[in-house]
Length: 469
Image (cartoon, rainbow, N blue to C red):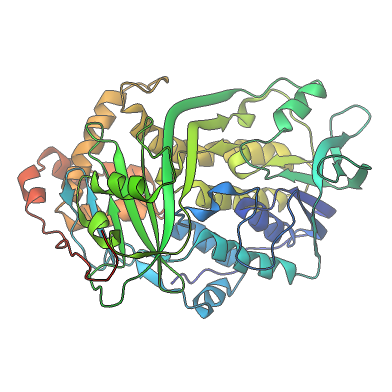
């Protein structure tokens, strides 16, 4: 478990507003409580009283993971929150030792890597964080309110507040603030609002991947002991497109996801279709695990059309008193699991910029956010751009980097040092540049794919129950 220390505090202003109440918003509001006398979190939905779904976060019922780096930042914002999480019965598990992982055509070795992550649902994680936020004396949560515009100074060079109304209409109200933070997600209206104020339209990059997946909760069958706590079956890109995940979550349940790239996904929420899709994965283990297991609810479908990045860092003019965090800036292919953690990194960066005062913080932050997002964006889009069908500009040297990445994945199929490093890079503990050290380059150049093929995987186990296959 992380041993993070509380993030530094400083007084930057009187009042800050965060609009958008998912993980990026909750973390941003918690962080801003260290820098402002008062913080108001505005959310269009009514927050449920418990770990329950809500309309504004349709993807919350699918598999999520807060990476180690993201959890470290979260623990810095809310000291002791990891203990709150474990108090719910959730464990922090070694991501290499407890996960049976198939990727690049072979099973990965399993050993203690000391890279740990909490094994819980997104719904429970948000609920625990929301409870901590509600307990802060200088934070007010204003749900059931929709942000409809920015209030600015007369010369429109500074954002001075946020205009609100009840969803669907009603009387407007205005909240004054020293800083307004947009965490409203990929559907953010900040680009349109800025353009209406006379600013240039923010440049966007989109990479269409047409990813889709379906998720369902299952009860873990009694007596089923496969030797793993989670299961991940990834395709050998670009020859294959389907993936499957079993994530162990709270209350002895499995959250099971099946899906893929470029339209290779379920289009109907039917039991037989879900099982048949699982049967078509590159390995049979997920299908064998769930074919007789007890479903605990309906099948949820989700489609993700494109990666989307808004380059606020490139804008020639930008108003003071405004910051954009999370999916409202950059929305990644969710298969790579980077969203919540990059949102945490942006929130942390905003806090660092505010320690120099609120004046100039917007410019300092948007440039820093651009630097933070460069690495995760490159990693996520590299996998997607490997498909010839995916349209998008390939960076210089893309073919060589793609070749190196594929060889590194083969190496991780049998080399513990490479797999440990990959886990640390994946969880944002180390920079991707660590994969290009002289030692790693030599290993990649002399990779032995046949050794990866000999790495033993778990034995497929059918479950003996009264349920029919």
